[in-house]
Amino acid sequence: RIYNGDYSDPDYHRGLDYAGWKGSPVKAAAAGKVRLVGRESQGFRLHGNIVGIDHGQGVNTVYLHLQQINVKEGQMVRAGQIIGTVGSTGASTGPHLHFGLNVNGKAVDPTPWLKWGFQ
Image 1 (cartoon, rainbow, N blue to C red):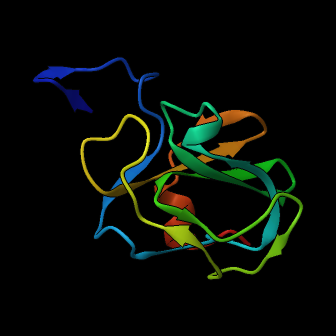
Image 2 (cartoon, rainbow, N blue to C red):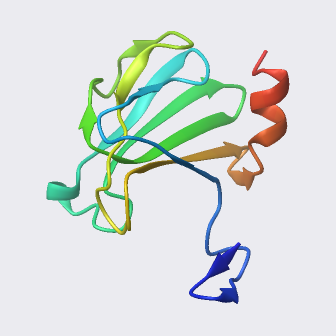
């Protein structure tokens, strides 16, 4: 990833950024239980409004910079369910979704998981 014209430390940015229109729906990548709902107003200044979902077997996804959050902690969600909307909260320079994937506590590239599915 390039940040301010220089290559950044790979630990700086873990996940994928998807540009989008503010207010566009954000859907759960897979079924699971909402484990984290954080809001910029609660001190989530870097990540902004955030949702974290536990999909079981050590697989967790995070959705950052949301404008609106449509789920609550502890809620079960279906794959494809709208969990919020694209925004620009936190340390963001424009509307986008930052999507992250952690497997057994380690950040991994979500690209293959999105291509092949979470089953």
